[in-house]
Image (cartoon, rainbow, N blue to C red; front, side, top):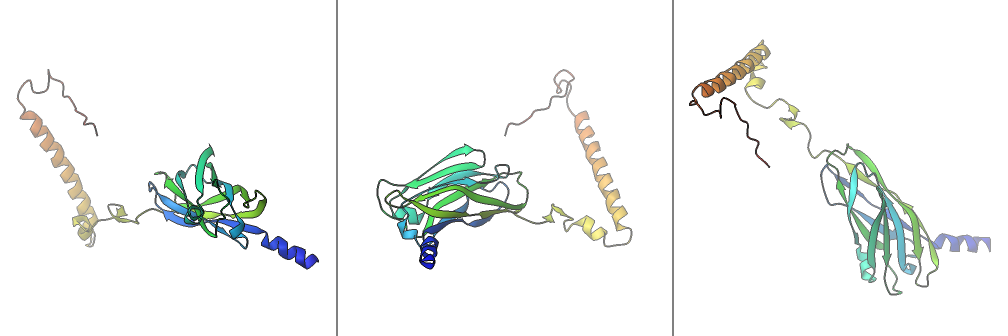
Length: 217
């Protein structure tokens, strides 16, 4: 009898699993699926859960109904409870059951200043019911949003470009010569600007004052 009770208990549960995805800072539409799975997946008619995430690194841009829930003619609604906490409700005006599969897709927008790292996306307050409104035991399994820079070091980004300075550095004393050439170029730029000023006609400076114009972008 005890064995029979334990077997029934093991079969009377399901899981909601958040997937994994990778994105770069400032990237939008990074999607993590939420998947229903379990021995009693064909007895689930309605689902509710909270999506918890790091609001300092990303925001939930959209939450859409997954194919498994859509096939059962279910709708998805969501609303923000607090920063980093969004409640999701998947239900319909019917008693159709939801088969195992993706029930929701969470689309995240990563903040431009997000640091590289792995951020947990978890589920809380999971409530699942069968077609008659009876509760079904369900566990939420945490997923991951992996934030990585879109590119490594390259030209103009922490690495010397393949130009004159790089070739000069390959010779003895070339580094000092390259630095001197840079100083000379800066001096010539200043002289050119002064020469351009002396060639302006009188009154061109608006009563002796030089005006700077800022272009709106």
